Image (tube, rainbow, N blue to C red; front, side, top):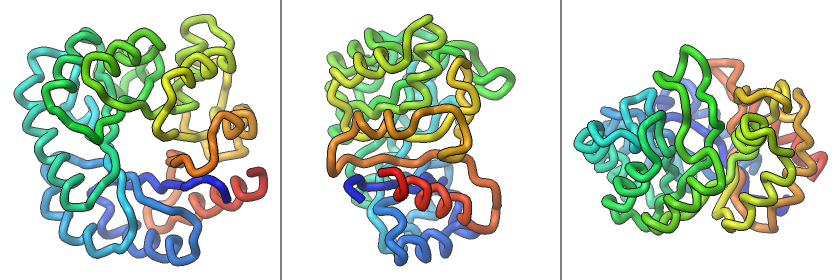
Length: 256
């Protein structure tokens, strides 16, 4: 396969998915782990260092108290970032993905991200409308071209293009999602996130398994050049195994 494929895990997954990840990595089903850092889990770093798999890091988002768009969160954001940095340093991660935050101001997002002076930082584009009753806010920062562009220019960060988020944001803006993704591609993404979507007309993300929804996955892959990283962020159906992720990888290998 011409892409480098990533498995999304959380830093707390040292029990249930740890051995499964090693098993699937030995079978060459994926190339790296994108590890979402849950605050207060530094004690897991030593075990993750032993797994023998390359890493990327995903900074916590607003569900775990990290919100770059709110000035009142600056101090706590900085503390969380320092923990994330420790994960990235000790796991030799190539990148750290950040969300732009919920509500607040995109200028604050850019200012706080710039203050980290983090050369591995990538901003991930978001839907416009946050999932109801789950996200602790209403509107996501970094949802459109102008907001992503502003953060990149001020902070000097790179860019992670999430296809599902882009489709949702396009729907909120009454845009054709293919032309909108074309626009986002002008910012030369450093890597990508991929899931299927239950409804390609919806403003809400669904993280469906590949081939189980309405998104034209082959079209999404056509935007990606050889050698680029794609983290597959589909939902996990089991708390004990990663069989569903293996099925996603098999499905992807059959079309790419």
